Image (cartoon, rainbow, N blue to C red; front, top):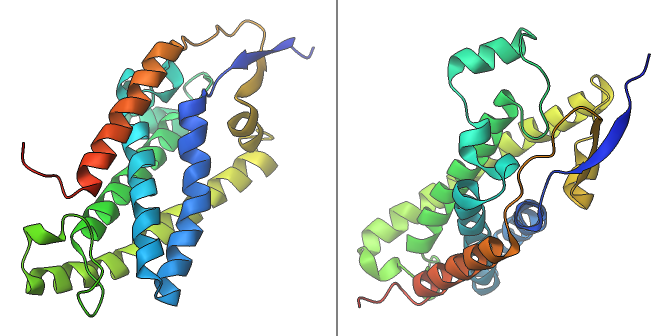
Amino acid sequence: MIPPYRAIHLWDWPVRLAHWGFVVLLPLLWWTAEEGDIETHRRLGIAMLFLVLLRLTWGVVGSDPARFARFVKGPGVVLAYLRGQLPAVPGHNPLGGWSVAALLAVLSVQLGLGLLSQDEYGLVAGPLNHLVSYETAEMVTEWHEAFFNVILALVALHLAAIAFYSVVRQDNLIGPMLTGQKEIEDDTAQPRMAKWQTAALALIAAAALTAWIGMGAPPS
């Protein structure tokens, strides 16, 4: 007998804003770097910084499905999931949780490198470039260019996982990230969702920190 299903609210707007913002900005960042449009690349990097800060903040204070404590588990839990010993839960599974954490980590590293980097002539630089020497900035810029390959590898794994779950597990991961809603078995509890005031405060905090860094993190 097929169990009854109902729609629950799974992904709120901060998660979806960050997720689809990453989808849009990553190709644009790659393209502007390839075309040598460093000024636009710099502006897009600031936008990416805001999204990463928002997602990191929301991973601490946000709705239950978005919280790192909810889906980033130890190796024992991940192995139990791979062996099929854990019940299905709405949101990121233990393996997918580490995928999300890894992607946010490499994006944070890449942003940190970009904030310190400069173009080949030293005319356009990241907002924190003044904190390092010219030679250090040149080295960091090379790392910034090379490290993008790590991001590409993680994105490829992410897309492969989405395809696997869609085709093999018959679990649509894209739809809920678009609508925020997911069809789930009727006896599954609705996850706790954060209040809109919390989301507004997270948005303001991420925007304020982004603006401060974008201005060169001036000393108080």
